[in-house]
Amino acid sequence: MTREEITAAITDALGTVLEREVPEATEETRLFDELHLDSTSVLELLMALEDATGIEVDPEDIDMDDFATVGTLASYLESRGPARSAAEHA
Amino acid sequence: MTGTATLERIESGLPSSRVKIDDLAGRLGLRATEIGVFRKIYGLDELRYEPGGGLLDLVLPPARRALEALPEGRRVDYVVFAHTMQMLTPPGLDAAPLIRDALGLHGAEAFAVNQQACVSSMGAIDITAELMRADRGRRAPGGYGLMVTGERAYSPRIQLIPHSAIMAEAAAACLFTLDGPGDPVLSYVDRVHGEFADGLLMTDDRIKRFGAVYAPELADVIREAVAEAGLEPAEVDLVIPHNVNTISWRHVIKELEIPPEQVFLDNVPRLSHCYSSDVFVNYTTLRDAGRLKAGRPYVLASVGLGATFGAMVIRRSGTEAA
Image (cartoon, rainbow over all chains, first blue to last red; front, side, top):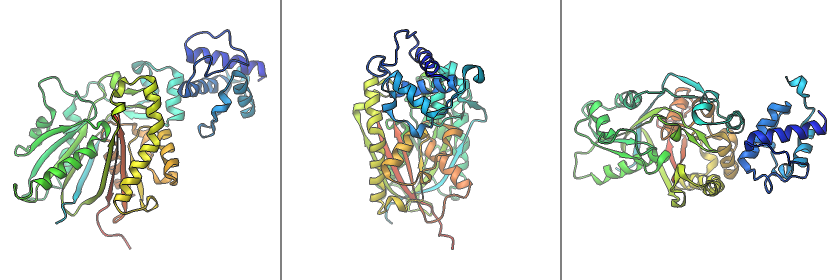
C-alpha cells in the first residue's frame, strides 16, 4: 500500500466513524482538535482501518501521539505494515 | 462468636441461548466498527441473552440449589434480591417477596437492594449480615440469609453501557450465615461517588471523568479491602472481578502492580457483564474448575453505575491441602 492509499483509507474510515464525508482532510488535519475524535472514537477508527488495510494493531501498543494528525496516523500504519492492497484484501 | 459473615453455598445459573455480540449490533444500534472495538479492545465475544425470558425463571434455579445447603431444621430469616436496574417488574409487583414465596421461605423478611447497581450483590450480603448481628438477642440464633441476583436485558437501553459494556443475563445465589463453616468474609469496602449519579444518562464529559477515576479508584478500594483483611495484594490468590471488559481491568491491574493472571478474566469473552451476578457466577466457575484453594484469600470486586466501587475479601473454607 502506498502512502496515498493509506491516507485515502484513513479518510474513508473517518467518514465511517464520523458518519459524514471528510473531503477536507489532509495529512495535517488534527484528529482530536479539528475532527473532534475522542479516545473511544479513535479506537473505532483503528478497527475500521484494520478492516480496510489488513494492518493488525495491538491494543496494548497504542500511543495516542500517533493519532495527532492524519499524517502521524499514516506513518504509524506504515510502521505496522506491510499492508495488503485493497485488491489483496478483497 | 465474632459475628463474621460466612458464605455457605454459592450457585449460579445461565440462560442456555448464546449470542455473539455481532448479532446484537442492530438491537443496540452499533456500527460494525463499534462492535469491533468491543471485540478487539474490550475483549467481548459471546454472552447469554434470552429475549422474552421471565425473571423468576432466571432467578429461582440457582436459589433453590443454594438452599440445598441449608442444614436440616435451620431457617432463613432474610431473602434479599440484589439487582442493578431499579425496575425489573411491572408496577405493583414486588419481586423480592415473590421470590421468597416461590422458594417456600414464607417466614423470612424479603427486600431488594439496588442502589449500588452492580455492587448491590456484595452490598446486600454486607447489609444483611449487619441486620443478623443486630438480631442477636431478638431472634433465635443460627438464622441464615439468602442473597439472590438475576435480571433480564429487557431493553437495548439497559443492555448497552456506551464505551464500556454490553450487558448479559445470568443469575446467582448465596446462602450465608454468621460464624458458620463456610467462606468467612474478612472485609468489605465500598465507596460511593455521587457525582456520577446520572448513571446511563451521564453526559460525555461526565463519562470521561468516570473513565479517568475508574481504575485508580477501583484499585484503591481493592487495596483498602485487602489491607483491612490484614493481607498484602500479593497474598491474594485471585481477584474475582465483574466482567465489564478486559481493558478496564488491565488498567486496574497496572494500578495494583499485580500479575495479570492474578485477575480471573476468562468469563469476560464467554459471559460479558451480567449486572450484579458476575462475581458470584465467576466464583462458581472457578470453584467448579477446582481453582479455589482451601484456606486461601480471594477478592470479589465490582463497580456499579451511579457510582459505587466495592471489594470483598473472603477466605475459601476448608483446610489447605498438604
